[in-house]
Amino acid sequence: MPSKKTRRWFILGVALVAFVVLIANTGLWETGLRFLFPGETTVIHPRASLLVLVWEHIQLVAISSGITIILGIPLGIWVSRPSGRDFLPIVTDITSFGQTFPPVAVLALAVPVLGFGLMPTIAALFLYGLLPVVRNTIAGLHAVPSDLLDAAYGMGMSRLQALFRVELPLSARVILAGVRVSVIINIGTAMIGAVIGAGGLGSPIIAGLVRDNLAFIIEGALPAALLAILADQFLTNIENSLAYTNEPV
Image (cartoon, rainbow, N blue to C red; front, side, top):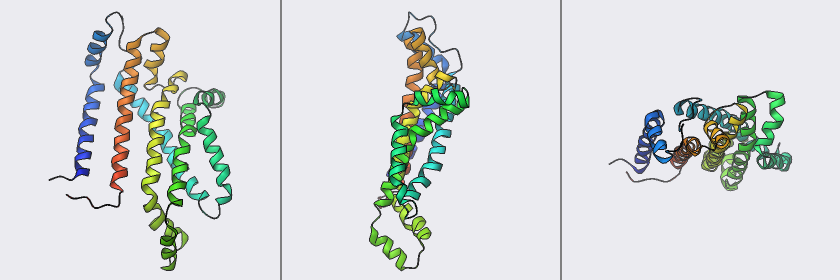
């Protein structure tokens, strides 16, 4: 009998296939939206197919979240070490400010420097998603029991060895939880990229608001919500796989 973890991955795989089939079927979307909004002359956003819009959205989130992870986790590790501990309050304040500062304002400041399209959107998403990654990295490392570290040092491990062999494995679930929150935030916030031509699922939403077309808005909002659920479940499955518990098969 398959384990609980295996069943979770199987269900997620089936849901992912169903999602791809759903967004690739333009005729199904047009039929459903025309049924819901018979008074609208156009119910499908003409800029690009829904499959292309979803792919553009995934690219925005993947690039910005990747940069956030690559920079945020090492930053959280550094300020939890003796060499960077004095900078902990500054890093905390800067990352908190990055999330409280509106992404639209970041776009407005970044466009004159980076131009329109992908780059300013990635910059805004990076700043907005940095806080949970850094905070959870710091919290996870600080939660490692000191007696375990003393035991590791007593066995002859250096600080670097103890970090990779003891601290990071024990704090991995907490760190990944921060990554999960950051990715979900970015999936929703990436909608603003359409305002400056970055594409993605924000395109039909912006067009729907401008043209007072609710069908366009649903065309962008519903796939984004489903994408957020799938991403959340994917990262949750990875997080659960890191649990230090024996699961019956």
